[in-house]
Image (cartoon, rainbow, N blue to C red):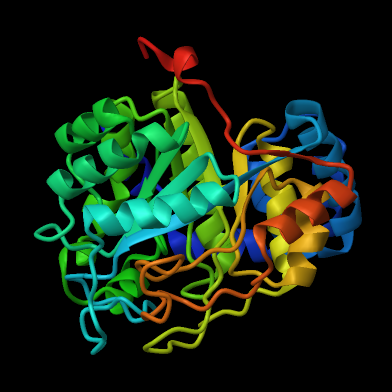
Length: 373
């Protein structure tokens, strides 16, 4: 198949929803007796029928994660470069319709932010922008990566979808990973929340991980924004997407994130609530499905939840995040993309992780290991 779109079009949202909600208790028990599970089994583990089995799933997730990753937790931090955006997204503070002060960091401001981030101990940074090709296009991003490359072993990016050739340029400049979330795999709901701008093109976004794989990006992050649609169906599509990518671009590493809607400038209420127990169930289901995929947790979640999730399958966690351009050292009061929930310092998060018997890791690769990839 030339892209995931062809796989995606062989599935029907409503039929999947019916199947997930029709799962019986006996099916859950049967799946949990298996050593390795399939996508059909994953569908069973994210069903309402599996909720009474969360404790058993958590124990298996913990054991599987320790077997593959040991007792380590990678820490990263986002660096917001710009809040300029040409899209309308109903759930985002950076949406073009929001009358906010727009800012894009200069070279000097980027380095000022970098110095603060390095003082906290980080060696893994995630570059984030709004989606504005004219302002923060490939030239700006290439310059930013080359500017900060001497300071970090691991540079990831979460920006607008680009062309394969653009990703190749950024990879050659030092880019390691790209995160691109479909937000929701439900086409009609997607269109409702993205009425204008390049992001309104559902298919172009859906095929972005294919362009990343063809460009040889070392790690690809995918996921859904929970609250826009039924989280169970969206999560199945994410798992389907993961399996397709792993089979097609087998040299690439993969990561999944779990963002839930947070308060922001613009306010949209979640269509479907995802409880803490639901999120635990989902994280454990992903880990039981795939022992190698990185599972990442941001500061969107509360202190209490993040404290408890450490041993349940998560392998990567952010701390002390600022979701506004210049938020660390340049312009601390500018508008955030969304409100964070866990506002503890990096040192406090590190102490929390270590108190649970885990070792903090500041990067997850060495440049020499990927030479020639």
